[in-house]
Picture 1 (tube, rainbow, N blue to C red):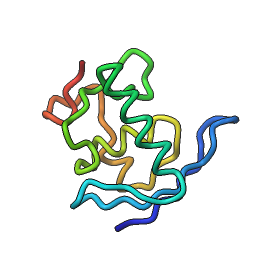
Picture 2: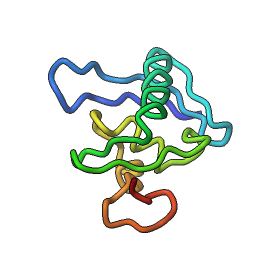
Picture 3: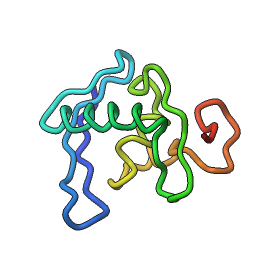
Picture 4: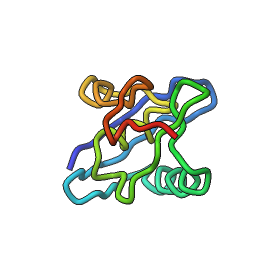
Length: 101
């Protein structure tokens, strides 16, 4: 279990405080319901939007078990710690986790 306190990149978007258990693919904490609601919205939209407006990545069946997927979900509007920023999907990335829609 890892506690993350992520500051917003944008005015009006609240910070996130969540506990992430990558091995179990679960989150808990103050803002976990907000993140789960975003995951549901992303599934309906057909992907996880990236910081680059034209791009998104396909959402996996268990996105909370993937560091790259988790980084994309919470990093769209929040600053990430270095280790999660390093696995944030890149539009040039051709690996399965980074495959673009």
